Image (cartoon, rainbow, N blue to C red; front, side):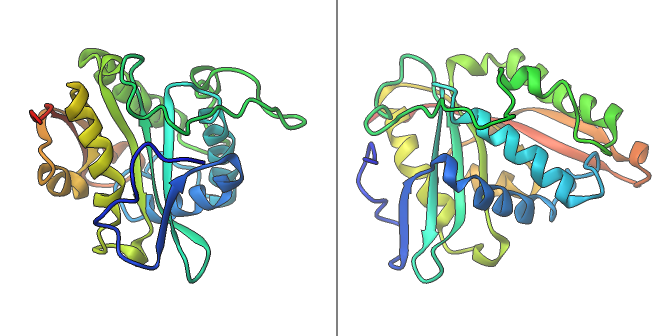
Length: 235
């Protein structure tokens, strides 16, 4: 599938940049789990990672049917494995990401058929249900407060820990942000604590915060999500 921009100039040789497809979901989830289990934000997860993997795969599949969502991946050419990927939710009037985009609307037997908001009403089996609803309710509340639907939103950026500090996150962001600049769109992100300094380097500024009390999960600290905005840069 065509990209809406050239191969990122910052991406090192030995990696391929392309759009994600539904066939990528198992690898996308693998990278997601590897990335997020190293953060403070799995306190509501089910203890069985197989349960979380199955639930997340079904959730990710729904995003390929959403006309607002565009997903890009980086593959290590030596292994053929996805090592980083990003999901952007694109406002209707931003057109620069359209080239090469397509929806995948075919249903597999027994697959959930409905919007993600409906799917998310049911937490993963064995998860901490109250904390699950508190977490995603907080995220949704901030998205509404900051009117994220009218902005370009970086929903997820996952890099496998073995590939940190190799510029993959930058490659997934730079060209998309340049399109946002060219079309005058603000970019929204809900940033985990460990990622805030990275996003600051690309012009994001913290405008709000969410705090989640992890003592409810038997831990002794607070998990913080920074709500960050990046205003378009004149080109």
